[in-house]
Length: 419
Image (tube, rainbow, N blue to C red; front, side, top):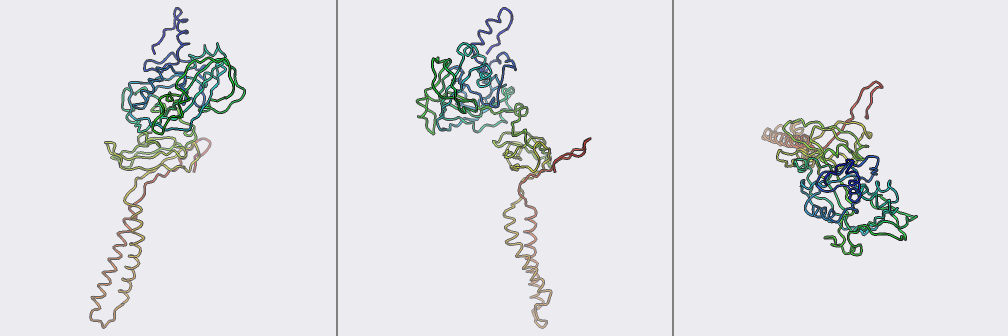
């Protein structure tokens, strides 16, 4: 969307144009900035409805999602698709139970909270009719799969990208104006609110898909008449992820992962979905059940080892800790089995044989006494050698693991930290 110069001669024309268009979503420049006092995004701001988008904008989004991950620039009340960024990945269809919801809007505050991307273009309609209602029928979801954040980070065309669409709910929707507000309600899409009941004197503003066809979706694909974008769920990438940690990260333990002892080794901290969080050494917030793991790889990216971060760290939320980590070495299970199954019996047997030989197990007048004693001593030594070899293999082998220790901070009020 091109910028509209706002000067005294053009102010009225610009306002009229903005009143008829939603916030920019094309690959052009961002629309004029929305005043922070008007942009009242709630806790679900990273999963906005897109039901008010025009038919061409929805078709553009569907076309991009059919071939790759969709990258965007998002700032709460403004969203722009970055067409030039092609980060790969694919969206996989997942059919869900049919769900119908209604979002009612009766004030500017509700408009900017529930439909932040289209609020600028719908203020006039709301002022005229006094009420907006969005009815949706969701048939399933397109979930992003095989997405490599590293590829996005390497592409200069993706430098400004802040989010990718992690999943997209599809179905049918209708945007209406006018009618009466209902007195009762229930939870709606992503906590935006819902209501049911009789309505009158409504005018249809926009419609996408036919809800009567949504039941015809299959496990393989949505039905063509019920595949319009309804709601997008954004996943922060790059700087946006670091600048806006989730609620779980805010209550997490800040863990420092030092550089590997061997400078030739290359270690990366990755999230549960395989996305790269940072290259070691680095410090990241780790929440309970984060699913994060360390990966040791070669220069060409080939993974050599994986070490899972514990689901729960023994430290208080928002405390600091330093991690020590190691990849699996040898064969912990097989070496334990060999040591206890073969090494221990061999050690016992070897000790007994050497003890018997040293204690004179053969008669002094036995002409072969020396030969027999030498044989028993040799057998005992062999058994002890087997026991020693299995012990050495068992001690050398160890499983992969990560351990953390709390850092101690000394200040004017004393020593602080979690122990």
